[in-house]
Length: 78
Image 1 (cartoon, one colour):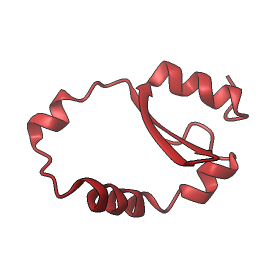
Image 2 (cartoon, helix red, strand yellow):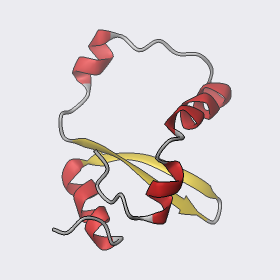
Image 3 (tube, one colour):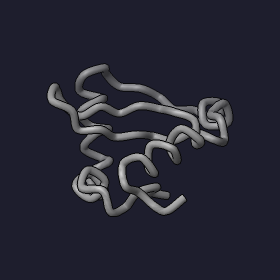
Image 4 (cartoon, rainbow, N blue to C red):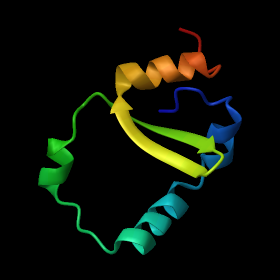
């Protein structure tokens, strides 16, 4: 679910998640994701994407923080 689908960065990155994964694997090496990893993830987590001067920043934040950032950046109505 995208919290602010009308934001330019969201629109530019929407169909490119696989490229971000490829870049991370290139930088950090191969990894294995287990069911234990999936089950350990919090239910209320969000991924943020910001285009800053030094590059694209990907961060994990709480869903509440993600919703706050979406409202701040002109995302979906609160």
